[in-house]
Image (tube, rainbow, N blue to C red; front, side, top):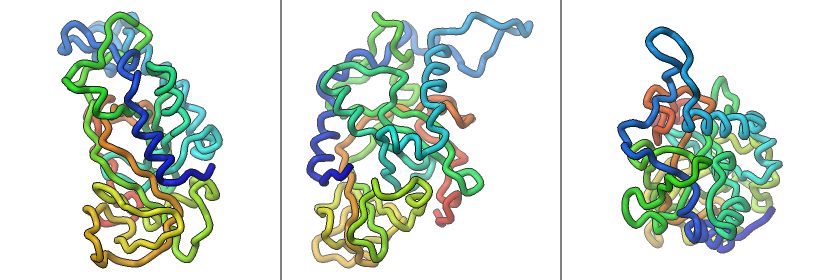
Length: 273
């Protein structure tokens, strides 16, 4: 799949319309949100599984087939590095975003993003992530709907977080022909191939750009030399989003809905933070 920067921008900007209904329902009192770590009462007896726990289990089972990241790529998720401290690598399904936008609502078993960490040098599935354009949530809590128990039960204070506008740039040294879809997940697991630029890069596939590869950086001023010049293989642009991580496959001491994980660092991929 070879899409231009412009087509990706159109896909991502389309996340918002019609997506407010169906992603998440909130409890009447956010403080009553069940603890997914609580397996039973004080006597060790198992309690009936809550709606929240059931839906997390359904999500976990649905994405378990993507423990092999190449299966995720085969199903339409695209590796959009680089490695983000506190999160990991993000694989985005742009077709799913487009379909959700057209149909309205969300399926809690079909996250728009899969998150992988690096364990012993291998890409390892860690979380599913939902992403919504910020315009869909003009006020805190507007996306929650208690009328449908099939929706993921959560609240905005349990993990929704803004993701600022930016560009994710892929540029493999000495390669001006390949696209991300030409590589395996293992081949793309190289932070040196990527740059994350905020707010965005005004570049197209085939053009050259000078960036500090593997390092998050601010917007490049016109004419400013930033680092090694490379030919752009891919640019993934996204507007400001609101996202929710669900750590289904990697225990998170900060909570299953935490936006970040304290044990996920750049040192996992050999980069000094």
